[in-house]
Amino acid sequence: MFDAPTARQLRRTDFPPDFRWGCSTSSYQIEGAVDEGGRGESIWDRFCAQPGRIRDASSGAVACDHYHRWPEDLDLAQSLGVNAYRFSIAWPRIQPSGRGPGLQAGLDFYERLVDGMLERGLQPWATLYHWDLPQALQDAGGWVQRETVDAFVDYADLVVRRLGDRVRHWITHNEPWCTAFLGHAEGCHAPGVQDFGAAIQVCHHLLLSHGLAVPVIRAACPGAQVGITLSLHPIHAASDSAADQAAVQRHDGLRNRWFLDPLHGRGYPADTLALLGDRAPQVAPGDLQAIATRTDFLGVNYYFPEEVADAPGQGPLATRVVEREGVPRTAFGWEVSPEGLVELFTRVQRDYTPGPIYLTENGSTWDDTLGPDDQVPDEQRLDYLARHLAAAREAMRQGVLLKGYFAWSLLDNFEWAEGYTRRFGLTYVDYPTQRRILKASGQWYARFLHA
Ligand code: FCB
Image 1 (cartoon, rainbow, N blue to C red):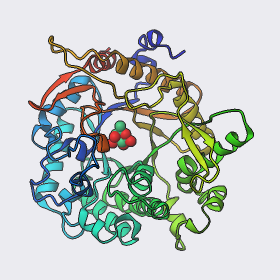
Image 2: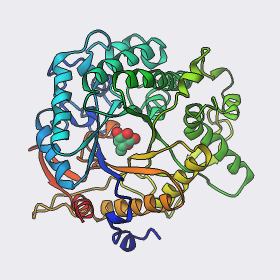
Image 3: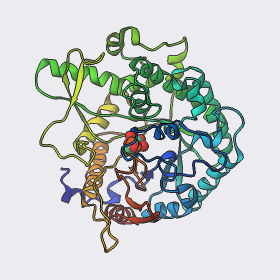
């Protein structure tokens, strides 16, 4: 069903007329201009400056220079034919130290950007936190500290008061799992902490800050549509053994249910809490009610399924992610599985009935090359895109309330710890010249959307 030739036959008219079509980016990955407009230092500036943290020793200091080139980038998005654009706001551009009054230059920048979207028929979808915490807040303990929750709610209030007359779609956090576990347990993302217990407390504070921000956003923007974006994965067992099957349950508990359950009013999953023991988060009275505040949609980023095996003694979950052999993988090593999209979304729909769901990120990285003819023949990305759209269509056919699809990403950009070695864009960025070249996949998406 999801073979490439069939998927390429898909038409936009196979989706409902009110389906949202978009592409996604994030501030630190594209903006550059880290010292302009009074912007404060972010944890990613600090992290990138530490030797050995980023694969190519790069940083987002220049990135795609989107801070200066945004009109061209929005033109590009418009030329694709999308009707929505998901971007994120850099907290250190608004509050350089993470607290205090909003910086005019920062607020003005996003206001111009948003006006640029509206002029081009692009519905703005703003993410408030896509990982670039002001370093000053990190110096005071960052997301491990409950005070950061209050700081986030103030920041959200400030931003939405200024932009809420033109931005209606708000995402509080992007992928709290990554912030918590890549940033605080594995330490391969900023702030580079390796402390599993801290990561668990960070999860709680991220979710709490989301829940407390929802009513504040609604108050500042009547009619706002507010949600959160989670990175979710179908989890499969490495073998038929009972031990590996049980490992799936444990892994799923922290990867998926740890976020989905409290957001849907069920509190933290009991089986996972039991495994965590004294590393369970500190939860104050009222926190779980706040986290379960009703939202208007659920954002899901889908990239790949995970396969796990029982691994006695390995971490509190005693599981290990294994790489199944003989399956197609992107240049990142992520398994390509459109079937996984159907499995994941039907599961979320069945187990949680979350209301409208938006696929807020989906995409792939390949070793793209710019040919002498100025073409980037990224057939694998094109196939990935077409096959995942076919899967999205199938998930809807099976009853999933999917309302929109955002491709990751409009542009090649700074891929966190991988630096510029991973290209995810529908558009190729020639970094030395900052020239943008629409790849074959981008051309296909545009033909699909214009048909
Ligand atoms: C997601 C992130 C996004 C990008 C893609 C490839 O986890 O949200 O910023 O890095 O992966």
